[in-house]
Image (tube, rainbow, N blue to C red):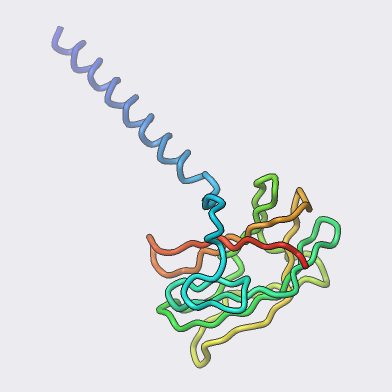
Length: 162
């Protein structure tokens, strides 16, 4: 009798652990979008916009344009933070349909780069980069997650071509 109770408790504990792990995995897959409050642009002395300043690591965006399903732009980084590098993997484009896309690496007119180490300089760029979107209708959101620690810092920049 005691053995049946222990087996039943063990099964319930296993199911509870599986449910908790599944919920944590589901939450980690959600696209982190900020509510539309106008707070996307220019935090912490970041001008001219659109741009983002994350603890002294600044990203400037210019010349945003849509060409078919490609969104093109120029980006420039300035690092006055504890970050050590700029990486294309830190940026994704979220279109109006909420599809997320990485930087395009297979187009001749679109630049990409390997991880850039800030060793003897504080600036990098400008670079002409592209994102392939499913829905080419503006506005777009550039999601930037610079590497400033495990629990630090992501930001969204609302972009409209023009």
